[in-house]
Length: 286
Ligand SMILES: NC(=O)c1ccc[n+]([C@@H]2O[C@H](COP(=O)([O-])OP(=O)(O)OC[C@H]3O[C@@H](n4cnc5c(N)ncnc54)[C@H](O)[C@@H]3O)[C@@H](O)[C@H]2O)c1
Image (cartoon, rainbow, N blue to C red; front, top):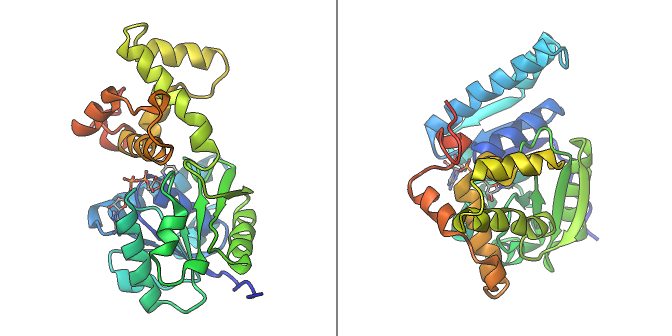
């Protein structure tokens, strides 16, 4: 059995909604963290967003000012892929398998042989990603939920290629990050995104049929105990990401009619009404 390699430095690829949250979490928990994105504008936005989140934690007396400085000191923002040298790479980039595998292969060339490649994909086949990567045994899913610093669950997705040391390292890291790690087999949507699909799709169908408007549906479901209605939740996730997940789960399960992705959501994506990250989705975010 290969021994687990100790994790000291984490490289998070993609500084958008998920990557910035994951990087905040790893730096808060004491790991040297590199946050990489192809877009300079995104790393700048991630840096100011992170500083703002940490300031709020200081104001709420959850961390001290010295801790805030130390956390920021552990974070490095970069747009140069050659800076991505770490013990584990957690990718949170665009939900497209060829882009993810190309990045992993590029990073396999420059990192040590024990580096772990964890994908935060919500719905793509981790097995397919692993089979296209140079060291498939060191690939697994590490699926965080949004917002990553807050949500407790992490799905650790094992493929037939993943070796014991890789899965053990990811489970241990998730626990060090204060998460509840659940090991699951690779399957379309894993556990949560499989179970949650009808929550979004049925709500979208109700709007399509004119039964109720989206705000009424959100208010009703929140009044019955759901923390967020489906439309507010889709705006938080990002309509592009949520639509990509719906399409991917639908295709992987053989296109069952009940899981057909919604035209309303596709149109929102086409209009770039992505939700909070673009300032407009079902709701407006000034
Ligand atoms: N949004 C959610 O609620 C959520 C939850 C769990 C998992 N995920 C998954 O996390 C991943 C990222 O989602 P997100 O919502 O953070 O997306 P996002 O659109 O907010 O951010 C993606 C970032 O990746 C960058 N990027 C694209 N290609 C790149 C490359 N080759 N190298 C480096 N950076 C690149 C983009 O510039 C962008 O900043 C997706 O796989 C998604 O399925 C999303």
